[in-house]
Length: 272
Image 1 (cartoon, rainbow, N blue to C red):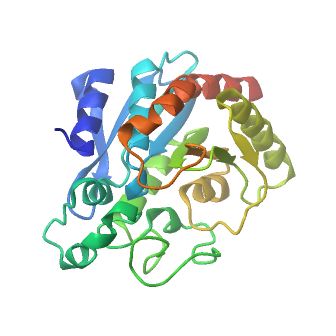
Image 2: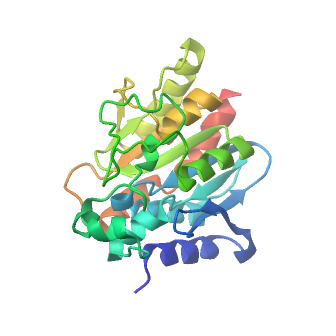
Image 3: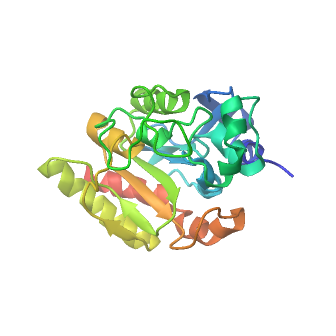
């Protein structure tokens, strides 16, 4: 049976010509953070990510489905389904890559969110880093911010890549809650724009738009809003339940979100 990294690579290669699949960087254990661009190079461009948290690795399947279905009218999209491959493989099959830290924490693998060094990648970005309500300063399964912003290879690679390609918006998939987060201290004009987009997307896929920064800090969404000044959405799939979720649990949300990248590009083009 293929692991989630193999499924990601095979899925992306099926969605595009094989030579269009590339890595934006490597994980702490040397696994590739895979990406494919679909659509046009002109017009609005977006970045779609998933599986930044290990126990949420099957959100990658939703993004792979989007890459396969993407029409590419009016712009293009970079699909990065598996931001945290080391954590995903630890969660899925107990792969420790020979690291004593992971071996000591193997009993936590089914609730693991962090990377192989115990850094929660979605707290490691340079956006009010270290000020989150749930941030911790000890490596472990979740919420550890790391020694400094972007100290983790995976978050550094994603930040550098995003700055390089200059998207007009980003979407990040997590689970669970059936919610959409969009806010991070935007100013008045940007706030109005971002809320319009958030409201439209939430209605499109049937999730609840959540207002307020909610003491968030150091996330990829936060980084994109604060540092790049663009709309950035975090979508929590699966309305309720408890971790860990199997791959088939994401099928319904995958269908609802399948054409979201194309819809978002149309929204962005209507804003210009």
